[in-house]
Image 1 (spheres, rainbow, N blue to C red):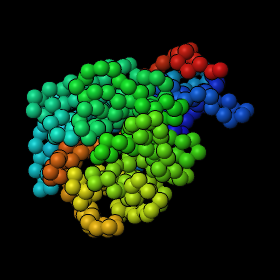
Image 2 (tube, helix red, strand yellow):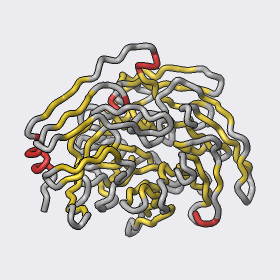
Image 3 (cartoon, rainbow, N blue to C red):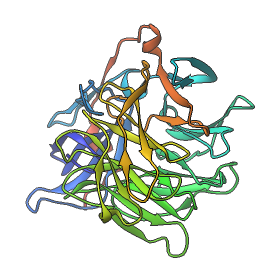
Length: 384
């Protein structure tokens, strides 16, 4: 596996390693004799289909490449590419539809004042969009042809940080939430990076970074001064989707160190001061309640689970309790980030609902064959 959970790799005669990440294919120039890559990953195409893994966020990527340069892949509206709707769901099983048009929504993030929702939309140019809950309008925020993904609000609501491939490998940018001005680059790295959380004081951005040797690690970026990135959690296992508590004391994250995904908590910023497993029986996509007295996560059945956190100088967690059951689009093939958010009062959850969960039949998938694909590959990812 490569980069941030990449899978289904194939080496092709052009000197490239092709692999899948989410619903997209990427290429890495690879020297077989030295077993070294030169440069970062280059996006090739998006929107292909995956099968569903039973207890993970990935499934087999449906593509293959012949030695003669023919690419074949399956496209459809399942998995990442499926059109979905937005709903509010509460702890009593009540649901309220949000009148946003059906789109390929991922990773909803409610603005700090509760009036807007930033969304990763995987159609057209793969951009960040903003839904106004009051005006009921959907407005496109980013316009670059490169993939713009994983939106995160700053606590003052003025900016949205996100991951973008507009300048090569997916690095971190931010842009004014009202659409004014240009996007500003925050990091410059050959590694793939995804934003996940901003501290309540607006000083620190927590993000995932894929390392070839240690899989996905969690780092922090100082948003002022020299904007220096600092490793927080780096082990041989995969750690990702870090979320900072609103009181600034704790970092919750997902790790597979036990052999399956579980949710853990560490002190922040001194992450080596302790570690506690919060989920039981598997968990991912952690999210702190606004009052820092609860920690939510998604269990392996796709349900939202709440864990009470006791106030005090140390960390003490109570027993997990399922509070939202769905069916909602919480676990999807090829999707790794958090697929829900919580209201300012901590009582309602913004969920994504797939059309198939409403009983509508999905159109059949299609097989696409691209001949002489190596010429396009060499153009997009030149080998030095």
